[in-house]
Length: 268
Ligand SMILES: [Mn+2]
Image 1: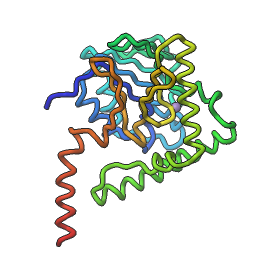
Image 2: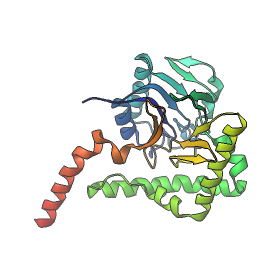
Image 3: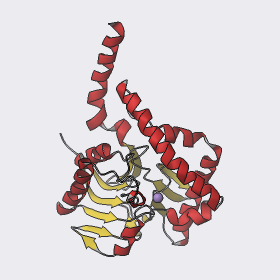
Image 4: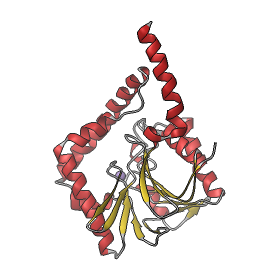
C-alpha cells in the first residue's frame, strides 16, 4: 500500500509513559506516512509519571524506533520538548541519532510562510485564570484520562471506534472553552511579536487550524484523547488530520466487518 506523502508532519502531546497514550494509532501514522520534516511538538514523554505509575509497553519502543528510523531514512526530525518532558530541554541544540532537539523552531512552509513552532506551556502564565485552578485542572486531567480509558474499553467491546469522553466533556465546559480561546489568541500574539506569519503548537490537546487576525494558528492536538496531527501539503497548506477517525489504513477496513458481526448478533 502506498504511503501518504506530505511535506511536514507535526505531532504533540503523546504522553508516552502514561496508560492513556494511544501509541498504536501513532505507530500506524508513522508507518503509513512519508515526509520531509517531522516535528515532535512536546510532551512526547510524560516524565511527570516517572516516579508514580510509569507505563512502558513494548509498543512504545516501536514508536521510538519508528522515529529514529525516519531520521535515518532522511526525514528531518525535530523534537521540541514540552512541560511534561521539560528535562529534555537541557539537550536543546544537540542531536541524537539524527533527531534534533530544540527549545523552539522556525518552520518555513512551501509557500514561504514563517511559522513559530513551540509547545505552548510558556503561555500558561498569560492564559491561566489562577494557579489554584490550574492544579485542579491537572488532577481532573489524570482522572479524566483514567475514565476515558475505561470508556474506550467498553466501547471497543461493542465494536465502536475510539471516542474521547474527556474531549467531549472539555468541549462543553464553559471555562475550558474560554481557556482554549485565550490560549489561541496568546499563541498567535506571540508569533506576531516575533514578526512571523503564524504559530504551530500543542499543549492544550485541542487540535485546530484557524486564522486569528491574519495569523495562522495551528495546534497539533494530542495522542491521548484525539489522535490528531498537523500535516503540511507540498503546496504549503496546513491541515488537521484525525488519524483515529479518518485513517484509511487502520479504521476503514475493520469498521465494516465489525458492523456486520454486530448486525448478525442482533438478528441472531
Ligand atoms: Mn504540555
